[in-house]
Amino acid sequence: MCDNIIVLYVFMILKFIFLVILPIIIIIKRKKKIFNILLLIEILALLIIVICNVFTINKCIYNSNIKGIERAKNKNQITLYNELHPIKPSNYNSYYVNANTNYTTAKNEKFYYYNQNLLSLTDAYYECGGNNIYIDSFGSGLSAFSMAVSTLYDKNINPVTMFYYYRAKNENLCNVKFDIQSMYNYLIERYGGITLSEISSNEIYSSVKNGGLVIAELSANENSKITCDSNYIVIYNISLDGNYKIAIPNQADYDYICSYSSPAYGNIIESDNMEKTWSIDEINNETVKYYLVKKG
Image 1 (cartoon, one colour):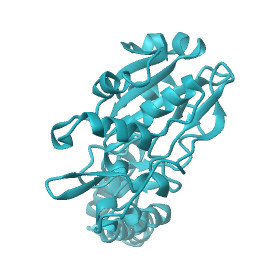
Image 2: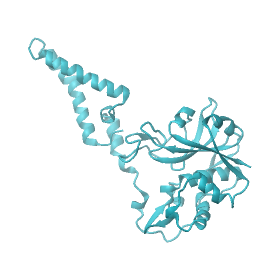
Image 3: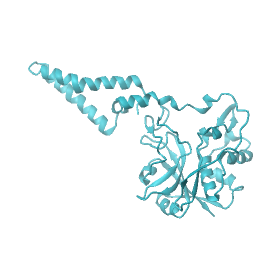
Image 4: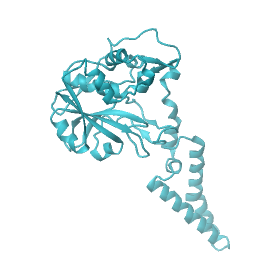
């Protein structure tokens, strides 16, 4: 997606010129010397437009339409949480953070889903270098692991509860990498009976079918549809057509566009990604590692 409104309007005007105005001029000037020059310009312009639209080579040309402009107007809907919350919250707790249990696993058991964009989660933070770092900017791995553990225990063990314990084990969080393996190493002391192992994509189907949960570590690229940056999701069920159902910790309730700083700049992350099913090829496109979480 191209998020520059002026550029989109310019390309819309150019499209109108080359698709409507110039063909009319060519017809009028067909007996003039300039005819061949205008015809060549028209052919080249149409070729560029067709190539860009078919292969989405230039996203500003491809998205220069009314729908593209409307999406670009909404590009600032997502703002860093730290910018919206410059003042440190007075307190927060995990008591009111409950999972959404409207989803089920392949074993038809309750799947515990937590969305870290919800207000009850977003006020959790740690201090680093004089700044407050909020859970919705670092906590997708924590939230994904929380979903897996809660589901396997069939108990509400939300990301903030886990974060309390994780923070107690790490005095200086500025030097901590919030990845699944390090979380597991610390949190397994408290939430035993759970094993975590790295698996290949070929093992996902049987793992999920047998009641395991697969955490996928994502890294965005130019073709991303699930995330704009690095992220974690949970693969928790299989649809009738053999595709997968995924839980996204930071799923927004509106479509948004990946920013300039994203490897997926211009791509649209849609609000119904959790209602869709995904093929293994689509998930593989954005995944760098898979972790199986199951009862030991």
